[in-house]
Length: 135
Image (cartoon, rainbow, N blue to C red):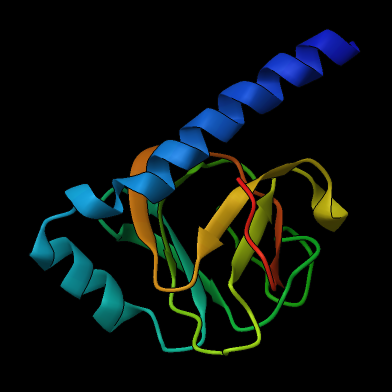
């Protein structure tokens, strides 16, 4: 894959994840309540279905590889994330940076603490908590 293809892919993926996380204002209250009740405080939660449905994976800490890291997300290797919720509670972090690649390679965007979103979905392979979010 050449540099231009990677740049275009990154832009498209970044646009999709930005759409996912900015959809917060468009969510119905019942969807938000379902996400909040199904994602423990202090965790990042992702689902393979829209509106916080389907298979869920959740982490309390950073994970360098969802496929073989500290918490294995069994469906993330062949399905996209369609819903995401940063239910973080630590005042030390502003959000969670998510990455297309393992070992924090190819950042996609940042999900602010307390932010929920749904969208068309992207493949995510790693994430880590961050003190600042830049999208």
